[in-house]
Structure formats: C-alpha cells, structure tokens
Amino acid sequence: MLGVPGAVPVAAALALVAAVLDAAFGLCLGCELYLLGARLRHARA
Image (cartoon, rainbow, N blue to C red; front, side, top):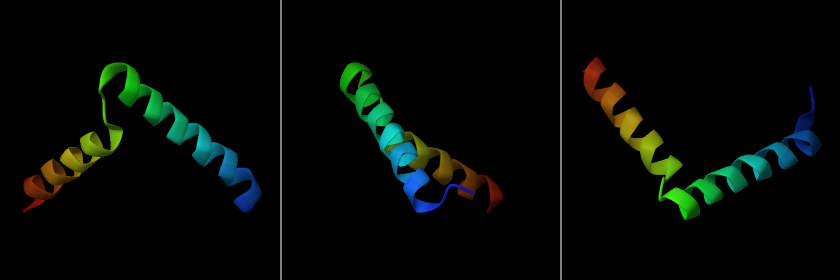
C-alpha cells in the first residue's frame, strides 16, 4: 500500500491527463463519466 504520499502524485498525474485531453481535444472526462453513470442508472431502473 502506498498510502497518501503515494496517492498524491498518482492523482495529480490523472488530473494532468484529464486537463490535457480537455485542452487539446475538448474531451471532458468528468462529463463523460457522468453520462456513463446516468446511462447505467437508467439501464438498471
């Protein structure tokens, strides 16, 4: 287990990748994950 000191650089790297994708391609990962969750919730109901 890495704990908090190991999780911070990983979280920062993921945030950097998400920011680059949004800036370069207009792809919002948070938006896409929200839509995926909404589709999954609707499919289960």
